[in-house]
Length: 250
Length: 314
Image (cartoon, rainbow over all chains, first blue to last red; front, top):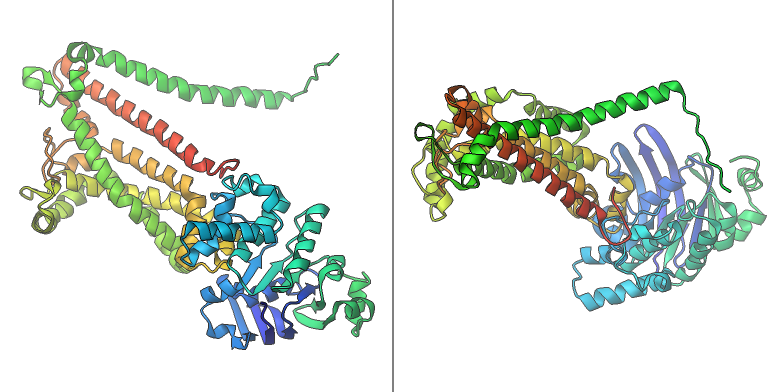
């Protein structure tokens, strides 16, 4: 089951550069929310705040409040938080020294799970959810690096799902992939939203239109507009949103 | 019919190709030549003693009796002590500097650690004579004998000058090599590997274990091997603290001798040809051990770098 997220007055800095300037946003549970906007608008920083990954970089700062399922994430241990809020990155980043199987269960093992049959069951379930099982079931002991880029990204999704988070953050998960691999990932996202609250950053507006229930448009560190995807794309209420989606800038 | 394609190369490139090739070959030639020369000079000793030179325990130039085992033993034991101490410490230093320390601390401590490598070995030796050995004799060795005396390595009367002192000096000397190389390979681990681990809910240590160390493993091993190579060949500092007595004793407190030390100490005193030849043979054995060790290390690093099927780290 997914969890809802409320963001209040969120400000974030990289050094002296303020990348988020007071974001107010409510993210519905079991929904796909797309974050769109031009480069440097703060959309990546925004999702990286939600699992407190932003703070791990030196010289960063955060202010404001993010409430996940009724509790402020800043009152929680970031390590525990990240087990509930999974993340998939722009470039596939499987652990190169590990096999496909070990990659999938890496996070589960961190939680102290050691029983082999349970781990195997989790690996299969996660790989099936990531629509990768059929392609790798005969070579689970091969290196994760032996897979294609699209397969590697689905492996990373499986790795994130194996921990059973309730929220899944995806930072341009398909931007390094070819159209067919992108299609696989989008299909996957559509299936996953039954169980997860998904937040996806994308620079591809068609992608947002295809998969997202609601879409948020960021510009210069501010949330310009957030609403049902169909409204954003057909009837935006802000002039800047209209300019961006109609390709006048960005 | 296929036509052979000719690639035109500029004269400058051809010249550079020849020059660099010559340089590369010269290194090889030098090494083979050195090995052969040493073999040639060591031949009288090799013919006289054969294999018993390596397993012989008596080194008595007066009676023309030469066995190298005490030196081989001393070199290997001191190098192992150095490795056992310096590898975990060097790796910890690298982990701290790379993953934990603030950037200012990192710069200062990193610089100081690398400074350790710049100190001449004779200075280490002096420090060993005047500080390390007395400290070992009066504090460390009696303590070890008291608490760990049931282990044969820590039995015996505290001398100060011995294999423990030699190993400790070597550990300090190879520490910067191991730390600096480990640090460099760990700095080369892509940040997205760290983030992958953190995003799964890894703690800092789990992140290091999951993402940093496996990625940097082969490089770290390379650094350790480089350190070991230095320890095996180090002469001055060891000779000043090891006690220079060709004995094979289990106790690490006992004076011993190393291959490099005996060559340096006795070379000028080698009054007859067989004596000189025996010393050169020790050099040849040291040369051989280092060579074998490096080949072995390379193989080990390759096998580690290969990782699971179908993948490669390097």
